Image 1 (cartoon, rainbow, N blue to C red):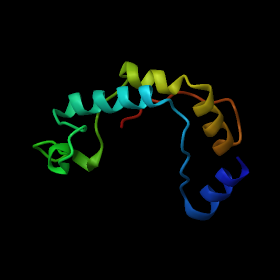
Image 2 (cartoon, helix red, strand yellow):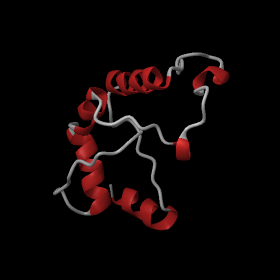
Image 3 (cartoon, rainbow, N blue to C red):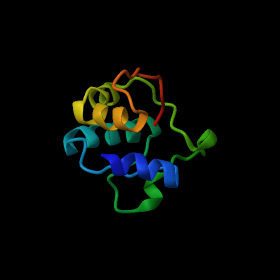
Image 4 (spheres, rainbow, N blue to C red):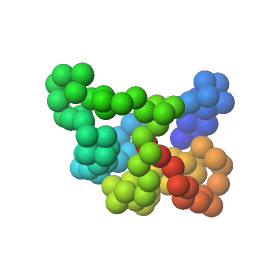
Length: 96
């Protein structure tokens, strides 16, 4: 995962694929869609956006069970531990 830290240092972001099982990812996407009242599974991109714009483009969905399921993945913990250079991480009240 050294390339992860290199990408963060060079670009300010990194893409990490295949960390979460599709079932957990899909659970989170369904929760986001339900919260917004949109159909993220639709083939029509117009169906992906809520009727009212989001403030700052952030979905204020906090502590949903699907988020906790993702946060508990050892592989995801390993990615953040590598990014921050420590395995002593705290869970934050973040949004999606």
